[in-house]
Length: 71
Ligand SMILES: [Zn+2]
Image (cartoon, rainbow, N blue to C red):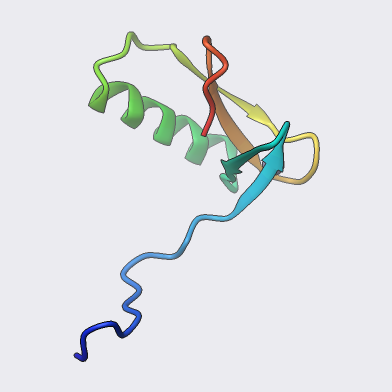
């Protein structure tokens, strides 16, 4: 494999823009929930810190936290 060649081991997450922020889209509520719990675990956040919500702009879900930091 040549250096600099694009290697894709995972699919780039879909994203959309909400309030000037680029946010990762999740295809389903379950998927977003799973990602939220995983992020909570890796950042040692209390369970429930992250909320999932359905996007206003499309058929997908996003994660938001209490401080308004989103991804
Ligand atoms: Zn969206």
